[in-house]
Length: 215
Image 1 (cartoon, helix red, strand yellow):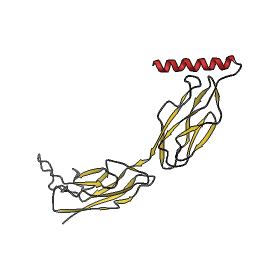
Image 2 (cartoon, rainbow, N blue to C red):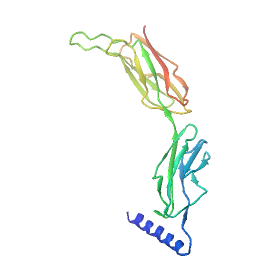
Image 3 (cartoon, rainbow, N blue to C red):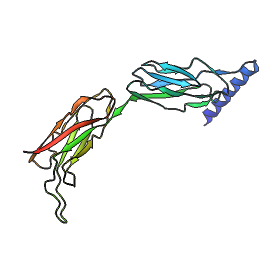
Image 4 (cartoon, rainbow, N blue to C red):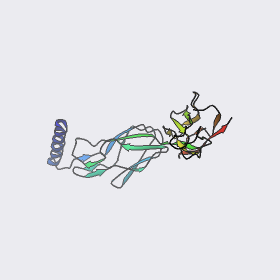
């Protein structure tokens, strides 16, 4: 609080000094960027739009604004394959602080990997007050991490949908397989994974198919 208060005093004093000399303090709307690895980012402020190249660690708008003028930095366009977010307040009034500095952080977009399973029937169905004995199988994404344990549906259909616990970044490879440990609660069936290997695009993967069949 004390530093912010002193900063405001310095800013106001500087503005007053400029005004006393017959001018008006001018401020550059600028900031820092972290993690921008792809092109396409465009920022806007007060009708002005700038393009920020891949790899840039800072930005600034060419047109300065006068003391007391409001600013509101926004995303006119997100970069390719990435999502950028503000890490500090992106709006304000020139002169509230010594300098305007807006923080931005960018990261690869991530999407879920999942699909359907079939043939995962209970070892034995529920009878009266006796609960069904369910089968389970665990899937592992060895390329990007994440796993999910499938369990026999209580409705006896043996089928259902699933998604792994960890999403995969755009452009990253994934490879989903049956967990190598003894994850089947019964040894009388075999389960295989179809469409389990690929490279993540710009949408969730939903076409994995786990097929379980009796031996």
